[in-house]
Image (cartoon, rainbow, N blue to C red):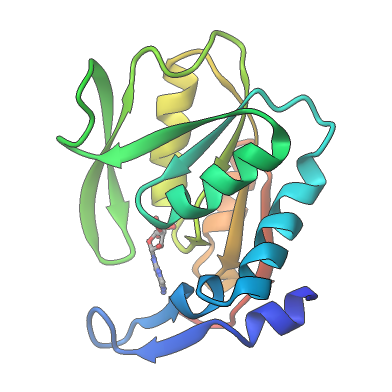
Length: 178
Ligand code: AMP
């Protein structure tokens, strides 16, 4: 399936979780067998043979995608989780969401020094989540090669901001507006 066909499998829920937000729901895409396979293939494809050493996935939808992409690239998967979920020593980073604030954590021993890292999540809006995950990876000595998403919301400006911070953003599709 091509990315236009995949886009038609994403469901839009207006005013969720609060008025004014158009929630781009990827559960309808990832519950579609062919759609899931094409999503993983298309997200991983630019990074095959690029020397990636680890895939970092952001809780929770980044886990579904990141684990499968890591397997495809033949590397390990590292979770970035919401505060209080990881059992070993962690470092943490507070960040702002499109709706609210939150805190992310990563295990201190999860990234090797100078490892080439691909960060994965389902969607980039303000880029706050990616920026926070990127800071955690850099603090552990990892080099961020790129970030991969299903959806970019370019009008919100996160992907542009993250490119300016030196993180190339790859997305399979864009939705206009916010
Ligand atoms: P941001 O930090 O603003 O780039 O937001 C990205 C995170 O929030 C992702 O993990 C998304 O799952 C979620 N998110 C933010 N805005 C939306 C939206 N309009 N539709 C679906 N998910 C969203």
